[in-house]
Length: 154
Image (cartoon, rainbow, N blue to C red; front, side, top):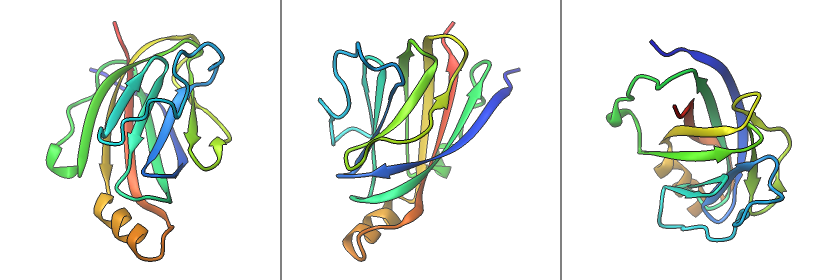
């Protein structure tokens, strides 16, 4: 049975409905964030990069990250406003959070001590509240929340 080996909580500054996760050693990425963002896709994938679209235009989302040693149990789809799953390459074993407004944010998400391929399941709640917030006051913190579960591809 798979188990959680690491948990982190990070903040993601959402701008223009999107934030990104990009390999920390991004100098060789063929499509760096934000090039090629597909605003119509909840979870976009490029080599070494994930793009996540938000319900709100400009705010700070809470992102909980779990790294598992194998595939985690399936999530109840009813519990989430939106869900997606993908594979991402991380040569460094670390992902940096990127914002259209502020660029690369401080800190990294540690996947492992070495690079490799990772599956990720992304779930989000609070999308409608983030959209309403954007239509009203414009910004906020923690209204939209994400759970990212990573596990190594075998």
